[in-house]
Image 1 (tube, one colour):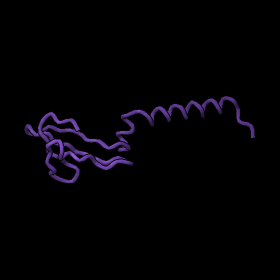
Image 2 (cartoon, one colour):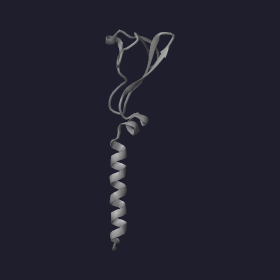
Image 3 (cartoon, helix red, strand yellow):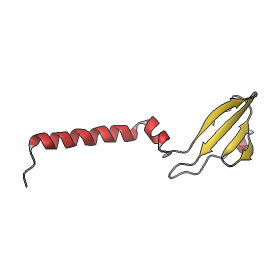
Image 4 (tube, one colour):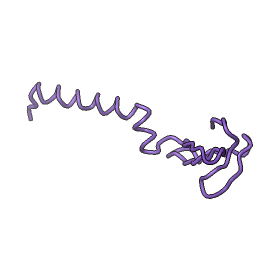
Amino acid sequence: MVISFRVLLTLLFLLCVLGFAASSGPLLKKLHVRAGCTSTLVDGNQLEHCHGGWWKPSPDLQPLGCADVGPALWSCPAGIKP
């Protein structure tokens, strides 16, 4: 089976593009590959919605002075960056 040079170059290009897209931060965050939190300011209180990643559990924010207010939801003093 003979693969033309154009097809081989196209496949190589697509592989490189997919590799770059997979290594970029926003795509990994959207797919929840990495654990992380999203902040929202409500009535002077900072609410953190945290999720686990594929290989790491959801972060524990109690050492930072945050209170657990629900599943994956934390109430933190303003200005905390988990």
